[in-house]
Length: 91
Image (cartoon, rainbow, N blue to C red; front, side, top):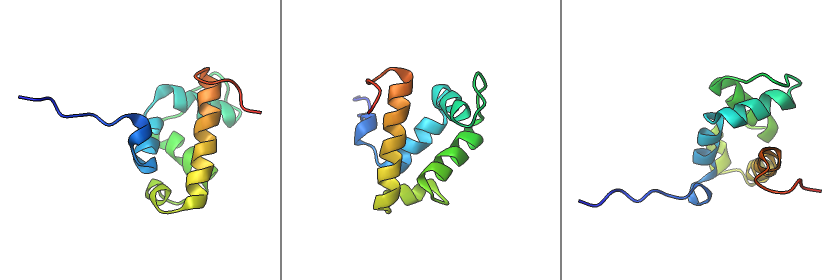
């Protein structure tokens, strides 16, 4: 029997990516640090609220339909990737 094929993170739609990020302890710490709570970690729901605030949306589902929200989400992902050291700091 074949194992199900898993999608790469970058191949998922933005709403799925956002859900995964909000469950990531590193993203929770990133969100907390961005809110002036350095050294602390947000809960999943607090990280989700931070993401919604940054993307100016009411629901992560809007990341699938709103181009403006998708652009803001991409900026947030880039800032998070730089914060984790995955990429060089954006200029």
